[in-house]
Amino acid sequence: MPTYSYIADNPEDGCLSCRKGFDLRRPINRPALTHCPLCKKPVRKLVSGFSTPKLTKPLSISDAKSAGFTILEKRCDGNYEKL
Ligand SMILES: [Zn+2]
Image 1 (tube, rainbow, N blue to C red):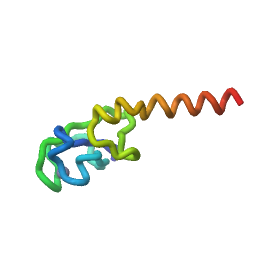
Image 2 (cartoon, rainbow, N blue to C red):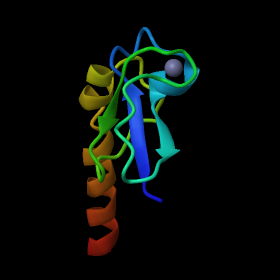
Image 3 (cartoon, rainbow, N blue to C red):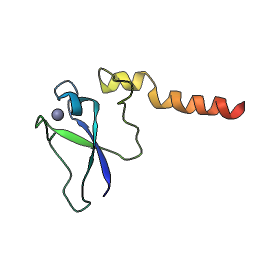
Image 4 (cartoon, rainbow, N blue to C red):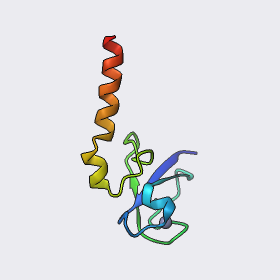
């Protein structure tokens, strides 16, 4: 069963789970989830491979982008490979 990542459409309006994103296992033939199962607020599916900003606990998605979360990770890997 594939695992999908969802995040609140409006991160300031969701509950504790969907505000920072959550993973959900669903049969592949089921339609995509449109609302959070906990707070019933609209959620959207995250594209697989895109790392969710759940570790940094950002205030908003734009904050996560400006923090350069994924870019910083790649930079660290590169530094280690050079050493
Ligand atoms: Zn929710």
